[in-house]
Length: 258
Length: 287
Image (cartoon, rainbow over the protein chains, first blue to last red):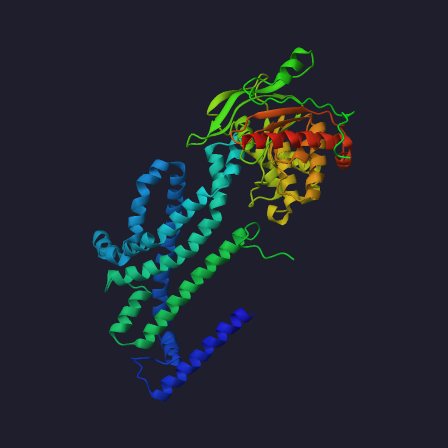
């Protein structure tokens, strides 16, 4: 209860102080709009902002789903063949450490402005992919070696060991990686929208750039607010998923008994 | 009077110091086999050795016959390679030298680790069913066999529980049920009760003896507890510190239906004393 009341009360206090300060010092709208002005902008531009939100959300979710699928598939491949892992892992790391802003222009040119959504998807995927790969790889390796022995003793095939032992062992790691990756997919999409530049992109990030250029700061704040809301929603959705999947058996998800 | 030297009445102890001649097959086994006693050797370990990757020898050479129906304890100090020996018998590890033979064919083997090693994502029933699931036994049959195995270890009502909700002793019982469900002929146990409190341990010792008798199991039991080995075994083999070699061998014939009260008997105390002495001498000589 206190956990929601306390930050809620603080937020309200800050909003109130903000509103009164802006009014008292007569700060111009194009420097710092009052919360009420931001709210008005949000209502006024609601349809166009929602369209942009949907564009950003769609690419984020697609990139995230793609990252989970490819990350898990590659991690499974790594766990089956040490050679493949040795050959590919360094390149996965290089892909991860190269800033996405730096790659964005290249990808956009290659894919073409007429297929800008695909370019955004690729860029967001690059950012979101690595936490899934590294977490799942670690998880697959963390299977209890005594259980592996027990499976072998009872004549389990490699496939049975993967499906019945290694994948369930990796599940908590994967879900944790998904929480990181979900946020990164959104960041990747936003950065890619910035990188893609004018005209073609229609996501929330582009709304911010556009509003900034026109000094519509209230609108900028409104888009920013929606973006933050989206990030929080993604995080909570994935936390809920983690809880639902792990609540029965994993230490991290089980409430203390007695 | 723990120090009485009186020979025991009910238990038969053959005390065979074997220091320096550990390379020989068990003198006692040969003598018994030649003496007309009906002993079926189910496993023969010959010149078994295992070294670490840096070349340091962890175990052996070890010569040992496992006899059908016996409760054999491998007793030795930590790091003497007794767990390694067990893993080699289970064919989970390859020996660096020597070999393992199954004169009557390889038996079905069950293995119980020091930790219960249950799958946390699976309920008790699913854990017990594992060996059957891996063999693709139909679900209906495997469920009823799992239920029966759970009843035998006293956990009938817990098949829907998840491992984390169980105590250490109950988890170990699940692990034993999982080993039993595949109807093993040879059960290998690697210090299974080492982490339990004394009361839980005593209860499990008694229950294990009952299961051993009912199923005519052959059990190879690794422990570092002299008292546990003395209570459970029909034969105790003591091992030296690393590299583990056989120091001596004790053949015991304790009363079949013994309970914890047996621990207070003079015979038990005398066995434990002699085994303990042998172990201490081995450690002292090595140091």
